[in-house]
Image 1 (cartoon, rainbow, N blue to C red):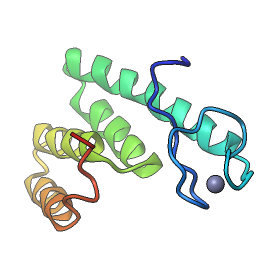
Image 2: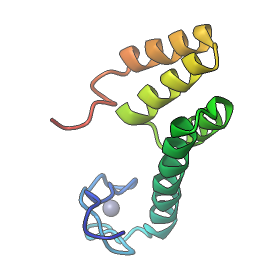
Image 3: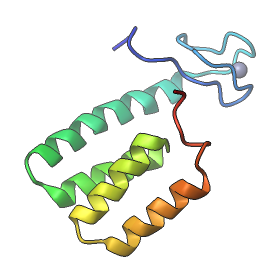
Image 4: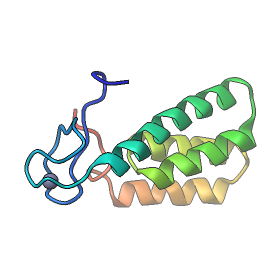
Length: 110
Ligand SMILES: [Zn+2]
């Protein structure tokens, strides 16, 4: 679990690369954030398995949950793909538009 993750960003002061239970800079408690992030990682695995087995509606639920926990380029992409697989074309288009609107904000560092 540890080591591979790029670290969290402190929601209070924005310091990145956090690995400990509290922020290096401002001492904010990061444990809840870490739990949510671990849950998101686990849900990404669920999503991959649902997709691999053709369980589209289950995949969509996972994608929505992941997107709720934290939005990033991957969550936008997964959500749009799962919406398409479930024939929710308008929803997929809206997801795409939201992504484009916030582009840059969601893009991962190159
Ligand atoms: Zn901080």
